[in-house]
Image (cartoon, rainbow, N blue to C red; front, side, top):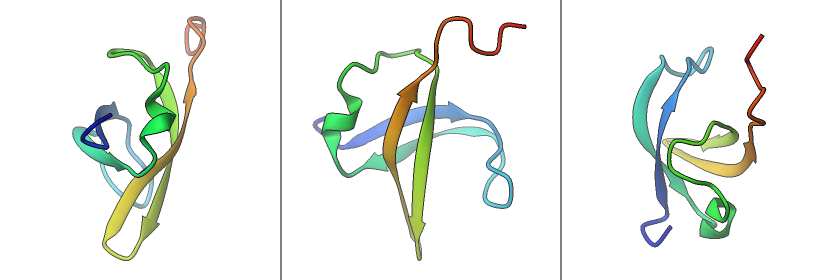
Length: 67
């Protein structure tokens, strides 16, 4: 949180980037509160020109994707 970034192993973002593990900027570090290493999340990525940052997170429930 102090660095205002988070490393995420993410799926493909269609029309934007392939699946990869990379750091993302977080402009408001308070959105990291309650997020733990290894936790699955959904995130909202905002892109403006050459800059991209995560604006929000939503924690995935333990049953998410387990079908």
